[in-house]
Length: 303
Ligand code: CP
Ligand code: NVA
Image (cartoon, protein in one colour):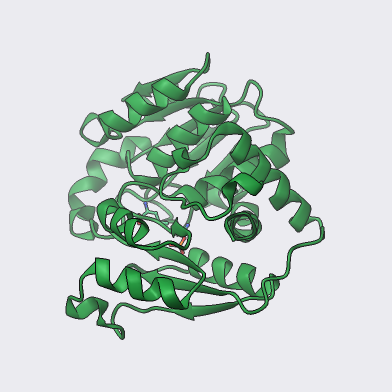
C-alpha cells in the first residue's frame, strides 16, 4: 500500500480496485489483532462543520490505537467560522498536523483544502460523497459473503452522498448495484456516468421501483431521507419517500441470506422500520464498528 502514502481521499474514486481491496485487507488484519505501525508524535486534525458520532469517534480511536493524537479543529472556536479563507487555514494547518479529516457541505471546499495542504486530506463526508463509510460497508459485505463476486446491492431512498460513494465503489470493485429512488432524487447524472465508466460487466440499475431493486439482492441499504443541511425538507420528503421504506415486505423479496445495512443515524419508522433495523438480517452494528478498522487502515496507508 506504499502507493497511497501522502495521497488524499476526496472521493472513493480516488482509489482504484486494487487499492480498495488492499485497504480492506489491511483493515481485516487490524481487526483480527494484526500488527499496526506506530504513529507516536503524529497528529490527526478533525475539522467538522456537521455533527458526527461514528466518524468523529472512530477516527479518533483509530488514531489513538496507532499511537498518534487527535486535535479537534472545531470551526466554531477557530477562525474558520469567522471567515478566514480556506486557502490560508489550509496552509497553516498543514504546518501543524500530519493528516486532516474534514466534514463539510461543499465538495469544493474539501478540494480547496487538499489543494493548499501538502498533508493527506480525507473526506469525512460532504454533500457529494462519504467514502470512509463505503469502505466500512465493503468490509461488512466481504465478512458476510466472503467475496464481492456475483453480489447485488440494492440501495433505497435518497440519491445522496452515501448513494454516490456506494455507486462508485460497487462499480470499481465489481458489485452489481441497483438504486431505487424517487425520480426527483436520483443520484447526480455525472456520478452515474462515472460509475458506468468504471463498471466492467457489472450491472448498474436506476429505478423508481423499490421492488425491482430488492428482488433477490444480497445487500439492502438505506440512509436518511433528508441529509444534514436538508432538514427543512424533511416533512415535504416524507410522503414521496414512504414507498422506499426498508420494511419486512421488501426484505422478504431479497435473498434469504440477505443483509441489511444503514450508515446510521437511523430514523425508525421512516427510511427503515425498527423491526428490520433490529432484525436478524441487520448488520448495522458490525458496519459501524468497521468504520474504525477501515479508517485505521486508511490513516496507516496515507501517513
Ligand atoms: N455514518 C456516519 O458517518 O455517522 P456519523 O454522522 O455519526 O459520523
Ligand atoms: N446522508 C447522511 C449521512 C449521515 C452519515 C447525511 O449526509 O446526513
